[in-house]
Length: 152
Image (cartoon, rainbow, N blue to C red; front, side, top):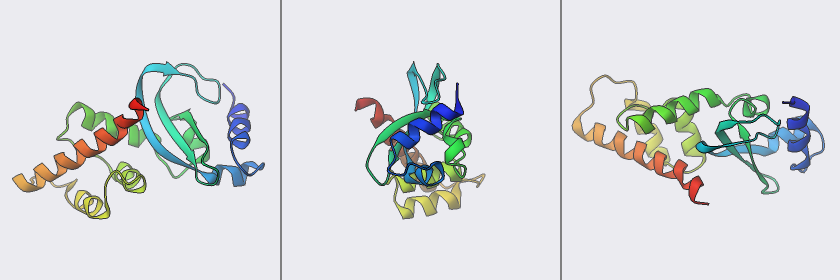
């Protein structure tokens, strides 16, 4: 397992050949909890919590583990995102967290209205039936969009 190996592979897939600029080219395009273990770009095996990345500049794609993604996308809390996804996958009535909601908006899995609604109700103890149904609908939409990655 090598941070150097991770950095080299990301630079190879980036337009910039300097780490500080290359890492800014990437964003998370999807997450996955895989049934089949994979190998991270750093060489670590097995990993099952995967972050699929898209290079915004050249369109390249790659996959890294949820720990390595934090080495170059420090504002992304992949452990919180993975925990939120596991929580709603296990119980669709549970709440996502704000980190996951922002990721969902960025990837267009939900729209701005849905984000604003979710952020407004996610910490409330009592929801109306209509609010609860809408929250579940958004959770189902997120789970569907995340799981689409497996069909590629």
